[in-house]
Length: 298
Image 1 (cartoon, one colour):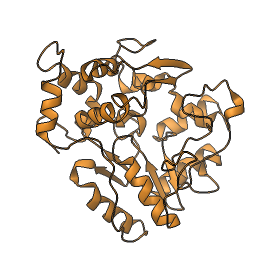
Image 2: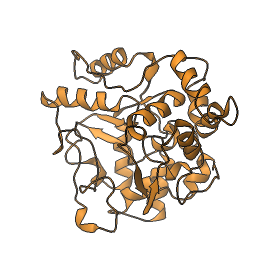
Image 3: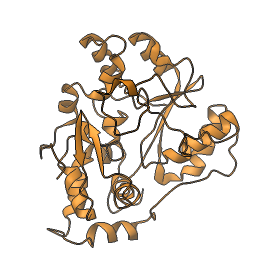
């Protein structure tokens, strides 16, 4: 299991009662009162959301077409793909500019940086109620993905590849056991949603796609419905016109055969359905909200 985490799996509301760090980060520089936090929470606002240009709100979900969408937005808004100093497609690391593992105590690493595609001046500088109104005014969307496929994609792209060996959450450094897929799934299942890295946090927690205080998105796109076609329709609807040659980034195969092989034939299983059942418990909210199943692709 991960260091410094328990095996307790809280409900979504129970996690929220702990004043999740995501919302607190936004109130920190403005009004950190409980009233301000409650307003954001009640309206489903999280700091995962990005205000794009003048009329769009997007909540990116890691391993659900995020890189593809960043690249497409960048191409449409600027005529080119915006990249960071390391040559990677530009991302939003709001307030943190010294690397993803920098501890919050190192204040010299903080700056009011936002990603290139975000609206300027940022709506996050508005008062709490004005921020809520702005979020609701915009065309909003997010992309969801079958949690069994998304978690395996995370393992292949980030854990097995060695790109993520540890991360910092709530001022704690957490090591990731990546010796096998089974060990990784068990470790994820031992965490609370608020302790998870963004690459495996549930949609329900990170983007408030369902449950109490869910955000009312204009569009929720299912990755499995054909991301290319869905993005074409989306960009036309929000006024950015047709998108040519969408470049997809993926590190896993897509289909039932691959999913079954990975989850049912992994080494070291304690029971035939162990990993399938662990994922179904951790991502129960996402599975129910979007009618996902281990035995169906969509």
